[in-house]
Image (cartoon, rainbow over all chains, first blue to last red; front, side, top):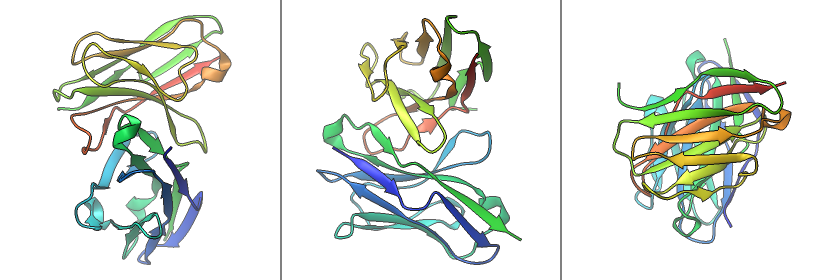
Length: 114
Length: 112
């Protein structure tokens, strides 16, 4: 069975400082991994995805994530936070043998201080 | 604009009432999904349709039914609403197993 754990429910950073949102997954087979962002009262937008190609994945808005199989991690990073990055972020895993359904982590709320 | 359209955006129901949440996508995607979002729990899958003509239960199907009307449309029905079904509902679609999902903007449902 697949599962996702987002290690921090809230992260607070100052504008211009690096962002690190942590995600660990459990999967029996080679998973696909995604990060989604949800701004207040909005739907979910795909930031980036890993599907067994390059382990360092670049996404939109300067975000990137690195797939580390040995650590079963897929942490999301950004070198310099912007006020507009304040939102909720979801790490998601999808497995072929699980009907390709998505399993969501509980979410991390990112706050950016001026 | 291409995407996933959900209606209504907001709804208040009394306990025991029924309603149908509508979802339509114009991207020719094969698979469609209904999720509910509750605080601290991420999104949980209610039902999905891997292709036109098929539907399957997800993690939390009790109290819901679905219909894949055609390739574009996938509706979610609450036959007898309960306060525990107060949530934000998202419809999503995608074209293949290695592709990310496109989500609708959500329906905020309150059952009183």
